[in-house]
Amino acid sequence: MKEIKIFSPASIANLSCGFDILGVCLNDIGDEIVVRKTKEKGIKILKVTGQKLTLDVNKNVAGVSALALLKETNVDCGFEIEIHKGIKPGSGIGSSAASSAGSVFAINQLIGKPYSSKELIKFALEGEKIASGAAHADNVSAVLLGGFVFVRDSLNFDIFKLNNPIDLAFTILHPQIEVKTSESRALVQRPVTLDKLITQSANLGAFISGLYKEDYNLISRSIKDVVIEPIRSILIPEFEKLKEISLSNNALGFGISGSGPSVFAMSKGLVNAKKIGDLLKEKYRELGFSFDIHTSTVNEKGIQIIKIK
Image (cartoon, rainbow, N blue to C red; front, side, top):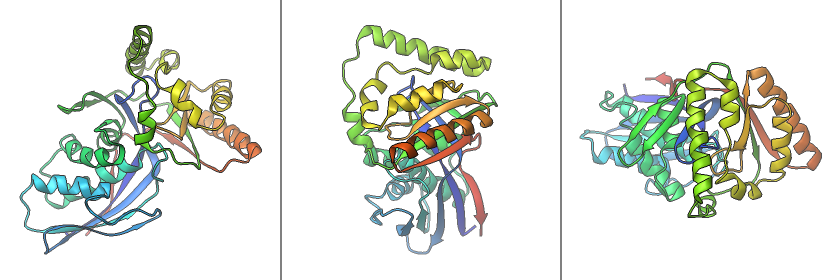
């Protein structure tokens, strides 16, 4: 195997009640990454299409994560990387995670898969660190493991998949503004009051229980954020109106995707997710805002191989 082309998907982090703890992998939205072996050792990023990003391997998240992998791995070759961005940086649906996880997944395949998908998380996290200033594993874990993931301890990589109720679907609205993760994280107030901690903890526990019991009513009652959303939502145009439209049209929940500005509505069934998408589109068009919109079921597989040479 000398060359591999992969699809590295988008993801939603936090899911309202699980700040830096919960993530979910999406279908159809993502980056395509090509990695090939070279005789010259090291990492080179040959090109990036779709977005204007640096080719400097020490500043591009795909390069940083790849270098972290090679630092711990004895290989007698190097690698060239091409990144075709389908996710806009600063969109809140895991742009940096898709690139960080995608490069290490591809290299791992080319060298005979010495690492499991879970073991690749620590390398992908190095890319996330330079993107956001924090080693939050929710996005990269969702991309590498697929499905819903739970990050119990990112420092010790105590991370695992959760049950995925088959009918869950997402509507993602991305306003065409950029919110940098590092700046959005800076807005989060500390300390959190005890009453909010209790409420948020109860919602998180109930949400996970709802996933395993496939109790959509419990999921709906639990996917609420009393800590982060009240602060970050001010950055998103017409957030409360979008939330009202979604919840009044049978969305199970509505919240900020990652650090924003993308927002998501969770629904039971793809049909309802598409209906909510149409209503959100109509509202943003009325207001004259530029946006992208996606509907997606849960991607249980994570990164997918497109072609091998």
